[in-house]
Amino acid sequence: MGRPPCCDKIVVKKGPWTPEEDIVLVSHIQEHGPGNWRMVPTNTGLLRCSKSCRLRWTNYLRPGIKRGNFTDDEEKMIIHLQALLGNRWAAIASYLPQRTDNDIKNYWNTYLKKKFRKLQGHDGGHGHSQDELISPNFHSSTSKGQWERRLQTDIHMAKQALCEALSLDKSSNSNMSHLKPSNIGYYPAQSTTTYASSTDNIARLLQNWMKRAPKSSQTSPENNNSQNSFNNNLVGTGSSHSDEGFDSLFSFNSFNSDASQSENSKPNLENQVVPLSLLEKWLFDDVGAPGQGDLMDMSLGETDDGLF
DNA sequence: AAGACAGCCAACCGCCCATCT
DNA sequence: CAGATGGGCGGTTGGCTGTCT
Image (cartoon, rainbow, N blue to C red; front, side):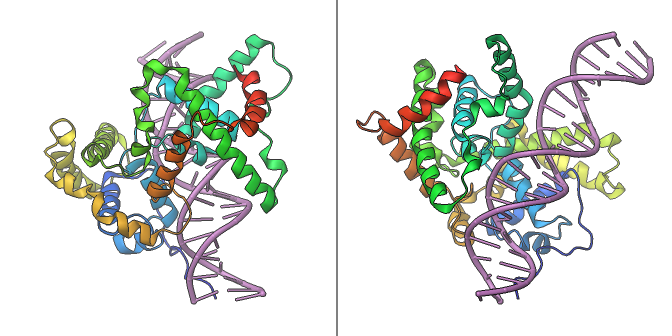
């Protein structure tokens, strides 16, 4: 027999998350750390499936997420990495620690793709679809050995992509400073800004919600009271951060170790601190090192020419 | 002013691999 | 070892919002 079922298939709420649900989820994660998503609906009483909770956390509530307005550097990085890695958004997102894969995916699908089409149009096009043109054909090989080689190639290519992206605009180094190895981890040491950013996330969320609240039928009558209380307690914190409560609410230092315990061994976003930092350190340390060229020369020559 | 349309994005769906019993 | 679930990922959808006609 396997594990017990993930979530009771009785009533599972769908659709947009309410601030109440967000708070419940964040509080729970603050206590227990991210992971063990199966137990989250049970422990919190949220009528959401575990997947939904995880998604909400990783794409929206997680500390350190930057939203909206992609910078030129980020855009370059995405374009480069997409060309090198294809539509592997999670892999791409791991090089833009402040962005979620969903965000990057959306940005690509809604904006960059069109931008590319335009560019292609100017170039006259070659009868290839954009994805064909810029994505390596990773899907043709699926065996484990090939996958391993592919991964190795990916790492080399990503390394080169980083170097190039960083050297594209040296003057904007300050903007790219978040890519320094020390800041790559998902729970960076500069905790206050991280928490503040997360507080802002929720404050912004609440403000949006307040704007929509009057016409949204999703808010049950009893929500009105809680809505007001949330308004009093949280929304006002956006600028002044009278957030002693929030500081504790978003103090994730305490459970980093818990998280690493409860997480499985996959290099997911939550426990990438060590492996990703090491990888990044290695990537950066290796920049400019002699004899790194073979793979990269081979791969980049093909992809970049078509691109730029 | 109102309807049509397009863009954006949060959330869901379905698949796959890892893990557990 | 087999069967079942958990978790992660990429693709897609649907609702909201802004713009155009």
